Image (cartoon, rainbow, N blue to C red; front, side, top):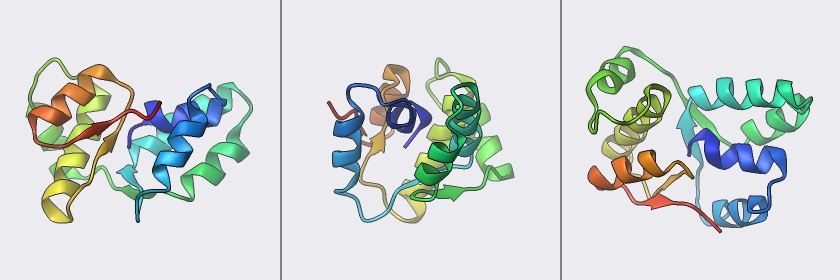
Length: 125
């Protein structure tokens, strides 16, 4: 998943309940280590670091290693934003190495890019 999904839960947005319900259908939740950075920065602005840390304990984080960085530099489409390219490169690695049921995101560009690579995007609502 990317930060657009778990950020909604952190902030208690209207579709947070849908996100949480949908996440229970997966055996394992995985994201880029970038999720921790983005979610904790969002949480710090909102004084919700303890909530962010509880949410993050439910997600396995994949390190942003050299292979992910190299893949993110050239992943298509080129219109995907830089940080989203890291999320996408991580998802594609997981899909190749372990299999991936879906990429949970509310970012339309990232969702389209995932579909382009054969990964099903999921935006619970």
